[in-house]
Image (cartoon, rainbow, N blue to C red; front, side):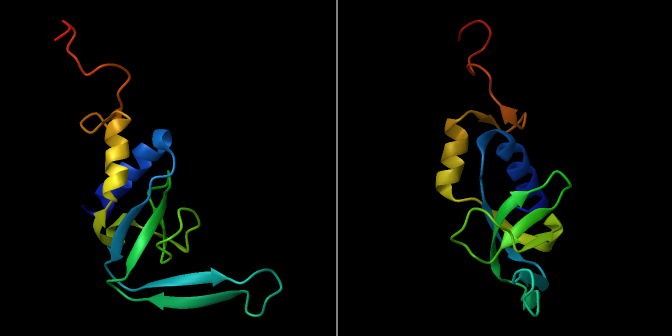
Length: 123
C-alpha cells in the first residue's frame, strides 16, 4: 500500500474507529527533532533517521500529512510529520484489519455501514 493509500485509510477510519495505527518504511532520510523540555540546553536534539527505517504512523491529519514515530510500541505521540509520499510499504496489523471489518467499514464507499448489507428485497 502506498503512503497516500494508507493516509486515506487511516484518516477515514480514525474518524469513526478511534486510534488505528499503521506501519511503513521511510523512502528517504528524514530529520526528527526530539524536544527535551523548556529551559533545556539544547531544547531540541536533531536526529537523521535513514531511509528504510520502519516507522509507526500514529496520526493522520486533516491537512494531509502523517505523524510518525520510530517507537513501534506506542499508539500516541509522533516525532515527525511527513507527507505520505515519503513512506513506502504501508500496512496495518492483521488484528486492526479484522477490527475494521467487524465494525462495518465499507471499503468501496469509504464509510461505515449504517445498516445491513442485505439488499432492499431482504435477500
